[in-house]
Structures are given as C-alpha cells and as structure tokens.
Amino acid sequence: MANPASAAGAVPRVSPFAASRGLADDVVEAFLAVRSETERRAKPLTPEDQMVQSMPDASPVKWHRAHTTWFWEQFLLARHSPGYVGFHPDYAFLFNSYYVSAGPRHARAERGLLTRPGAEEITAYRRHVDAAVVRFLKEADDDALAEMMPLIEAGLNHEQQHQELMLTDILHAFAQNPIAPAYDTSWPFSGPHTGSGWITLNQGIHTIGHQGDSFHFDNEKPAHRVLVGPVKLARGLVTNADWLAFMDDGGYRDATLWLMDGFAAATSEAWEAPAYWRRKDDGWQVMTLGGLRPLDPNAPVRHVSYYEADAFARWSGKHLPTEMEWEVAARAGHLDDAFGVAWQWTRSAYAPYPGYRASRDTLGEYNGKFMVNQFVLRGSSLATPARHSRVSYRNFFYPHQRWQFTGLRLADYGV
Ligand SMILES: [Fe+2]
Image (cartoon, rainbow, N blue to C red; front, side):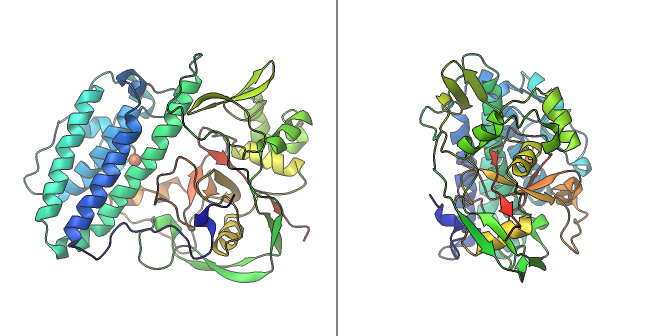
C-alpha cells in the first residue's frame, strides 16, 4: 500500500503556519498542538514507566518531556523574553542534552537515575513554560515574531523528533520486561503489506536537497545536483518473510555476507533475528508497542541495524540504495511506503552536502557535529509525528543501532 505522502507533488506540508489570521494566533496554535502531542504520547505511561532508561541510547520519557521544555526555556524565553523567571535553577543542568555551548549537563547514561524531579513536577514545569511561551508569543509584534520563526519552527520540529524517540525508547524498555507490557493495545503491529517489483532510474542529473525557504534542518541544504543511475530500486520494503528466508539460509552465521564490524556486533550481541523478535514453540513473535504479537510475514521488517541491512542486501545479490537514489525516486513518486512505515537505511554515510557549514551559534550543534561514523536513513516511520516528514529529510544513526523503526528497500545495478 502506498503512503500518499510518497506520491509526486504530495510531499507533506512542512510549515504549520497559514496566513489566514494573525501570525501570533497561528504560532500559538501550532505550539500548543505540538506540546499537547507530547503529553498525549506520555499519557498511557505511569510515573515508573516514565523513569526507566533501558540503555544509554534511550532516554526516560520523563526526561524527553523535560528536555523539550528546557529547549523552549533555554533558546526562546531566556534569550528573548526579558524578565522571564526560570522554573527551577537545577533544570538547565538536568535537561540539557548535548549543547556544550549551553553549559554543563547531566551524564546521558545516568538519566534513568533521576527519581526526582518526579513526573508530576515535570508536568508543572511544562505548564510553567507553556504559559510563558504563549504569553510571550501573544505580546510579540509581527516583525519580532517573523524574525524568530526559524527558532520557533526549530523548537517545534525538535519536540516532534523527541515524540518519536519517546515511543522507540519505551518500546525498548518494555521489551526488557518479561510480562511484555502493551503501550497501546490498538497499535498497528502488522501492515501495511508492501508493494513488489522494481522501478528504473535512467542515468540523469538531478537536484536533491531542500529548496526554498520552508522549514528544513540545516543538513538538508545546500540543494545540489547529482548524477544518478542507471539503477533499479525496489518499489516496496523488504518484508519479514524475506528476512525469514535470510535467517533460514544461515544469514546471521555466514561471515562472508557481513562487514567485519557488523559480524563482530552480530556475534557479541548474539543476533539471530531483528530486535524484538522472540522465538516461540509455534513460530516467531514480535514485541511491539501493542505487546507481544505473532510475526506477520507480509509486513515490512523493522528494527534491523545497518549492519544487518547490508548483510541482507549482499545475501540477496543486491545493494542498499544511496540517499540520492532514494530521494530522486521518491520525488518522482516511484516508491511505495516511502513514509510512515519504517525509516529506510541507505548506504550513504552521513556527511555534509557540498558547501554545508554548521552555524557557530548554539543551534549549530544540532546536526553538523554528528556528521561522522553514521549512516543516513530516509523516509519516516509509523512513530513519526504527522507533518514531520519531508522528501529531503535526512535521519541518521550509528550502524549497530536497531531500536528505531528501521527497515530497508533494495537497489539493483544489474539494469
Ligand atoms: Fe533534543
């Protein structure tokens, strides 16, 4: 089933702001919508659920709720709202993530040790900052607001990124629990049943990257021309059935299929299947946000690392696409399930586009300093918030990581 967002000309809307009313009204509405979505995602979770940190890469939900609030306090209120009184003097230290220029911060791997402040205090923190932001936005004149729009949109998009992490992180935590708790019993754990066949990109020069002034992260620019093709890309995503065939053929045990670092990771971590798969007497089950469910062979595979995706592609006699090939095909509307199902690994290293330079202000730490040793994923996942997908969006993770909703599609150069 094709996600409508993958069709040409139907790229998701990137700016939540319309010109129909005063700018302040639109900004306040967008701000409150994003803030309430964070709380909606946290609502099914108890204070104990919200505190757990099941590995250093995952953060407690309580921390995500507080850190996204700190972002508004640190970058908007403290800098632009004279007279703003902070909620608590310790919170800048506790809830800064990685912004060195914003000051010292609590150790990332120890976020799960914070029994205090409790979830209720974080709710109060969020309300304090929400009220101050709304008051500030309503009192700002349109010129000042227009000038702050890049910062405000960065804050909204930053919080949406954490909304996805809240779900991936709590799934990892619940997957460590022998009673396999469900976050949401109606969570869509199986479909969609992805398309088949191949599309061909003939050799050509194309422009990729974000064009225009609508919101984007700095890593999506500069737009630039690339030579792509000839290559075929799979119309659909690799499925669980495809992955079972790889497993049954000894894919996890055959070192000739793997990168050296990948085989070392697979061995030391004792990988024999994607993350969250559980072998039962009557077949495989999968830990999902809806609890433990039978494996749907026709659904796209998720929770595989770059190392596994690369080994699978080699076993298939195919390749992973580059991010340039992915974007050209997605812009042409050729890809099924490009968005809203699983982030798709590409074989492109996460590197700056030609001419990219991170800005030297604090927000310049957002993307640029991570441009080493990671790989680009394209599309979006079923946990990505609405209106947070773009055809030029570049997600990135380390090649061993697999707790995100990560899958793949194949490329074939035997055109
Ligand atoms: Fe953050």
